[in-house]
Image 1 (cartoon, rainbow, N blue to C red):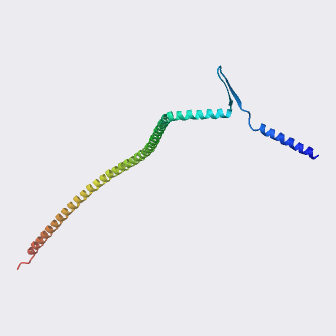
Image 2 (tube, rainbow, N blue to C red):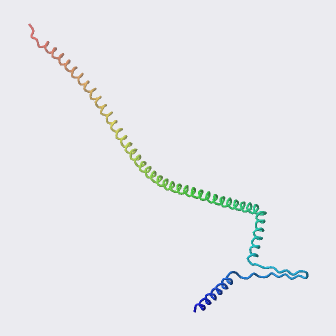
Length: 200
């Protein structure tokens, strides 16, 4: 039993070793070149070819970049700058147009509101003017009427003043007449008294 177990263990180790060797890597391909004068055989490793190709590609890219990186960068930067300048110009133009539009729109709204205010103000002023015109006409009519009344009163006053003056003149005349009448009476009385005295 002990020998069988050891043999089984050895077989398992051998199998494990073979599996490990099989799992290491794929076998390398042979690169065979047949010429009339020469026959060459070389191992072809895909990984090495890939690495060589990558290195060659990197070298070519580096050379290309060394030759054209400045030009490409300069052209790219110029294009970007031109694009940025164009975009900035477009954005500036758009912003300027937007500002102008907003400014004009605000100015139009202000004019519209001011026009409404003027219309209301004109209507109110017209109403006030009409009311004032009616009031002025009424005052002028009243003034004319008052002037007529004042004129009439003045005429009546002058009439009364003339009548008073005439009354004074008549009064003075009557006083003079009375005075003369008294003098005449006194004279007559004296004359009658002398004629009635008895003779001796």
